[in-house]
Image (cartoon, rainbow, N blue to C red; front, top):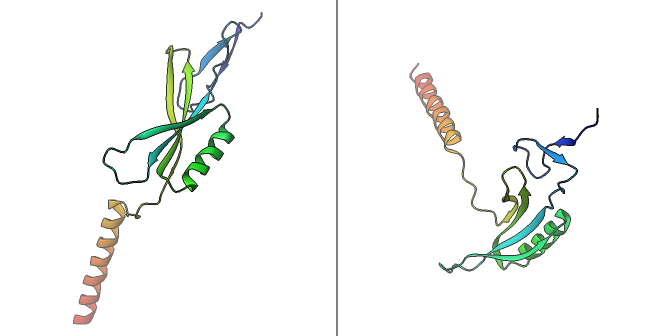
Length: 130
């Protein structure tokens, strides 16, 4: 019995349901769009599309060059592909380059460290009263 299609996971997403490729349907072309966000503190600053390529390596090289120029706070690469099941284009953030922000500890870590310090302080106080 001949197979009418090949069942595959779409390469652009790991969470999408599998879809069937039939010989009559062409495989979707993935496009990588590069967007930048200006470095100045202008309240009107917005995202600007800087280019579009078909190869992921080219997208990364282009995005890194833009980011290293120092003109942008953030540079993003978005994957764009056509989902034949949903019959629409899908845009997903694929890679982000941004200046390091001040590191902040998650609240759970802060709470845990505070609790440990309180236990240590009470233990020391108890030991000193003996």
